[in-house]
Length: 236
Ligand SMILES: NC(=O)c1ccc[n+]([C@@H]2O[C@H](COP(=O)([O-])OP(=O)(O)OC[C@H]3O[C@@H](n4cnc5c(N)ncnc54)[C@H](OP(=O)(O)O)[C@@H]3O)[C@@H](O)[C@H]2O)c1
Image (cartoon, rainbow, N blue to C red; front, side, top):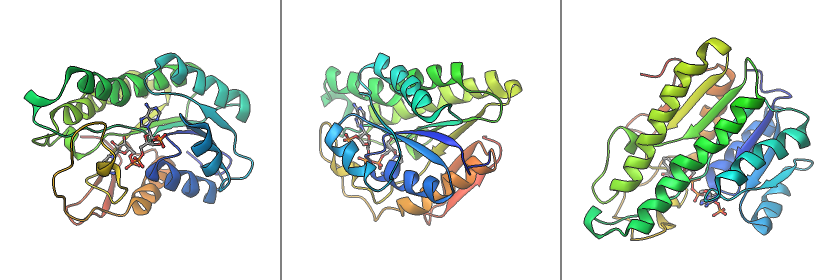
């Protein structure tokens, strides 16, 4: 897709990756709409993106995800791409993580992006893009992160199935599956404490690579062991 003038909903724009992606998109001439759950944080990030509309959603409320898509479309006069840049993580051995924590992770990491994209697919046409951050755990589940890993694997599977459904209609499905990044995400779990982790990759490089992937209608972005983002035209 041509990002210049593209109308892009960034859901999770208050996050580090969402903020970096919003700046990257705006720098390439796109028109982003910023979605988040907290009005004050949303207003704060909107200052860096003058003129960009803001819409509220809470990933724990699927109806609000669909509403965000329709609100963004109305504000931008159409929608060419929707990116899910939000998520939640929890740490702890599987037997010790509570059911409510597990439910939260599946709601935020699977059901919410699915609700967002279901609504997007009804309003977007050929050449448009839906994109989401899963993570390397989707293919390499980690001990102490069973529900986070499983939720990202579930989202990855959902995207893969939808990609097959919409390929002939010209809508592109992009999965970003980076390794650990230096965003502080692991320090903001809904439960538990992160194990010691090596230094993370640069979120700004990943945001730039995601924009490249959108521009080239690629299907997969991952990071090499040294943190270098790699864009692949076809998902494996
Ligand atoms: N950082 C990494 O190492 C890494 C690696 C691979 C994949 N990812 C994925 O990348 C995505 C973005 O993470 P990040 O690193 O940028 O972390 P981040 O800065 O903590 O961003 C997380 C975002 O998710 C939003 N969020 C969380 N729960 C929400 C809810 N119930 N409703 C609406 N928004 C909610 C947060 O909103 P608030 O600002 O309101 O809290 C924030 O915008 C996540 O899906 C994560 O799984 C991250």
